[in-house]
Amino acid sequence: MHVGKKPRQYHSMENNLIKVTVIDREGLEHCLDAPTDMSMNMMEVCKSHELPVEGICGGMALCASCHMYIISDHILSEPSEDEENMLDQAFFVKANSRLGCQIKITEEIDGLIVKLAPVSVE
Ligand code: FES
Image (cartoon, rainbow, N blue to C red; front, side, top):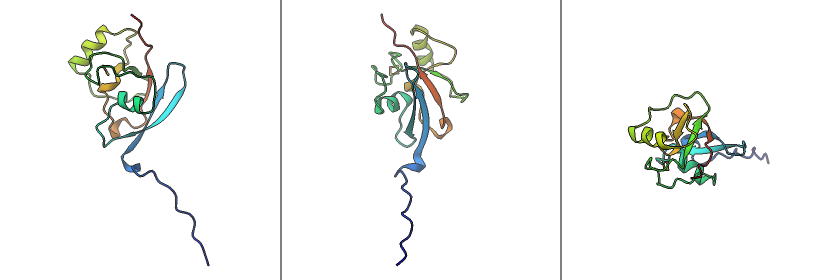
């Protein structure tokens, strides 16, 4: 009897997943699956993959512990006033700085590459 090829295994949420790359503070790249249908943001995706992003304020743009640099040339939505105010007070801010908690996981950011900003020690 002919036995067919084993079916390919697909991730159950394949259609709702994008890939993002996070470069940690040691320079290691982590290619992560990020779901577009769970109202997640980059801070939460990093935390869910146990990367060292604290997210102290829970995503309210009030702590900058999710500060990251946008490395790829994706055009993200403009930062809100709250995000800009927080970045004004953060350390190590660059032109490509964003708060990870304000970057929503959507299809538009598929392939996004970010680098975690240094942890500020006060
Ligand atoms: S988690 Fe606090 S500003 Fe992003």
